[in-house]
Image (cartoon, rainbow, N blue to C red; front, side):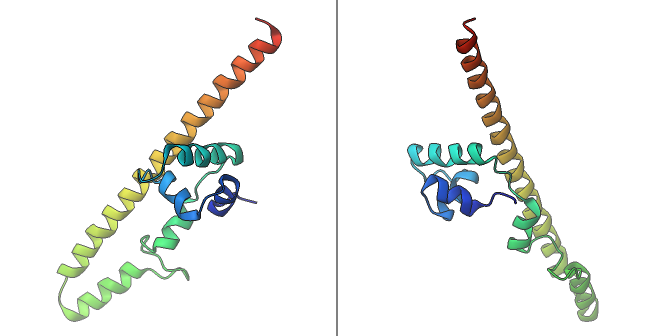
Length: 132
């Protein structure tokens, strides 16, 4: 079963909102709390689900039942003979998707960084055990 934000929050002893602030790098979290959350993320090997995030924001252009919302918007605008609102919404949707991809990229960079840190710790621990 996939690890959820709730699991991270429970392990770190914080709220789901705090986990969200840390993973989105909101900046209004104390360093100690941030460290606890990132430690929980690393421990549980949390990987955010981009599809679930888009579904929650409903910014993907596809409804939960699979109907294409953009097609409906275009059909309505064609009936109203006004395309300007659809173009603006289209740009806004693309901008929102780009921001979501940038956030996901940042989260993946953090995870890779955490993995590299864990690898270095493991190497040091192994060297100490082997006495080299």
